[in-house]
Image (cartoon, rainbow, N blue to C red; front, side, top):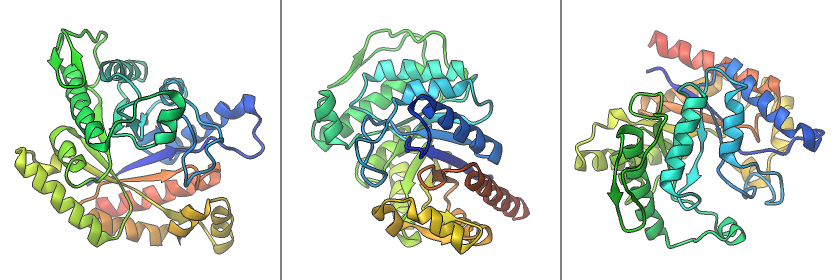
Length: 318
């Protein structure tokens, strides 16, 4: 299995970078990730900074405007959100936006989506924030609409919350079957069932290997219920490893994290990190995402490139 590596950019706070050069730094990081061998670059779909990364008043750029601009500065990596909140946009409009991103990027878009959780943003922007059950129902309908608009010429659909009537989506996506759908979250009753029903990629947070295996078993049971081969879905993990060449380098990275993130992080050298990732791969996980709030410099991103080479080399030998 050739693993997928994602570079996630939830942080737009760069020390010493003036406001009029903020996006230049975003581009620099995306290019560094592409050069390091990453397959995917993602941004958050939030309007406020989120807890665990920084204060909500820190800079946060709108996701799809940012991704469209990154299309011109990258050439190989896939681009998407990790993940769009279903409550933020009409799903037909969202499908159109992701299709447009696919055309602009020449076939490199993904649709990352989840049920949304940040109530403060909803209040601030005036978005409705229904119960989790209703948000999950909306997510199911939104995923249905997106798949229809990616694959059919004039689809119609009428659900409880959304409807389309012979909706046009021209130009069509460049990727056959449309952009891959990434669903974030591990809710055992609803989210994993929607992943089995609609998803191509699942994104989960790191946990103990035993806990992840338990979640994977539940996901496979949902796949069986909808006659889906679970091997068709790539399971990816957010990685909290702090990769550094020495103790001094690790300490410098840890000092830049929030206390919450610092408590979750584990320091490792490239060989140690490759061994950890190998264990996850043996358990059936095929994708790994690293965050730019940890890896802020070109040098630290290049070090991740060494890890990517080591893991892929081991995968080939296996």
